[in-house]
Amino acid sequence: MDVITRRRFLAASGVAVAGAGTALALRDILATAPDRDPAARTLVLVTLYGGNDGLNTVIPYADPAYAAARPALAYDAGQVLKLDDAFGLNPAMTGLHQLYQDKKLAVVRGVGYPKPDRSHFRSMDIWQTGRPDHPENTGWLGRWLDAAGGDPRLAVSFEPVLPPLLAGAKSAGATVPGGAVELPKNVTAAQLTALGAAAPGESAAQARAAACFTDLTRIQDLMHDVTASPDADDDSEPAATATGGATQSLESQLALVAKCVEAGAATRVYSVSLGGFDLHADEKQAQESQLAKLDKPLAAFAARMAAHDVVIAVYSEFGRRVHANASDGTDHGTASNVLLLGAGIRGGLYGEPPSLTDLDEGDLKFTTDFRDVYATLLADVLGSDPAPTLNGWTTRLDDVWV
Image (cartoon, rainbow, N blue to C red; front, top):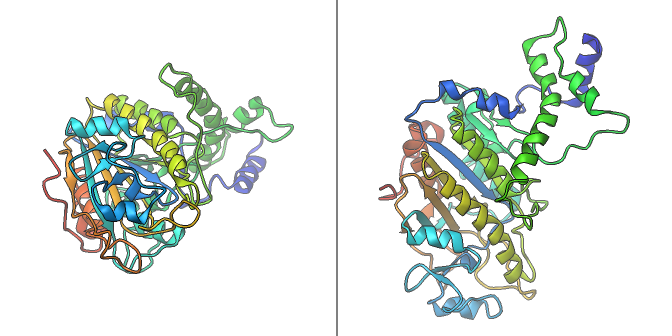
């Protein structure tokens, strides 16, 4: 393929668009191993798209207001996986419950922000930009990346599109394509590989963009190795909704993260996701199914990463309303829980649990600002001053580290 045709093809495909994030192969991530600071921690951020029901995740089973508000949705004391005499985890979360018993899981309750927005997209935008006070076009980890030098390999997403949280003002994180590759008609794998071959007269950026096409086939081979492993869950299917979520299972995404960590990649931040939590009807069993798709891969990943300095944070754009709706589901709410686990995390319950009766127009009042969580992760995991990234915010969680 000559250079002119090749360049036109790249422009038409949109692969080489500047500022939209960089599509990389796993080899690009693994090649950074010699540059890894052995003292550096790694952050893995797990986004639950759709607004996970926090009250049926971390369950206030001893509060009579809980059962009164949700006659068909409430779990009783005999069903929950107890954390203490008042709270328990959803029955589907056996792996995370064991981590809590081992004092390796921190549950931060009542996390939210002032003047909450119940729109999926606006609330997720607030969480990912870290700016509840006014609109922002950069993500909180994208701004961290700007300050860290801008190398896209420092912040990697295994989601189909670069999430806004990894977009900075001067740089952006990288995406590693996953899922199935479906070639257009009349295009063979050999032709796709040919697109990645070096061509005389082109810039390094164009060569890297072209190589992404070849990388797609290599990623497929890796994905096959991951999903064909003996530990793979055959019942784990991709879960996504219109509100977001990766097109490959959380298990597959975390397996790729684990490969990078074990290889000593210099990447400091990984972003993965699971969708399917927007459950307005028949919620109870459906949420259990979704939480099982979170619990099993996350517990296995935590065990695999036990020898590495990896911290995992799990969040959703909002919780659900306290009272069930007429369809045995719950509608968009506000405050919810953030889960923290991994290296150095002191397990336990954190944050004041919101009242189920003193509500804000039917919704929980937040008790912990989500920027406290972000400031903690920036300072104690990424070794960065949170103030420039979070517009002056420096308050952190207390006693969350061993």
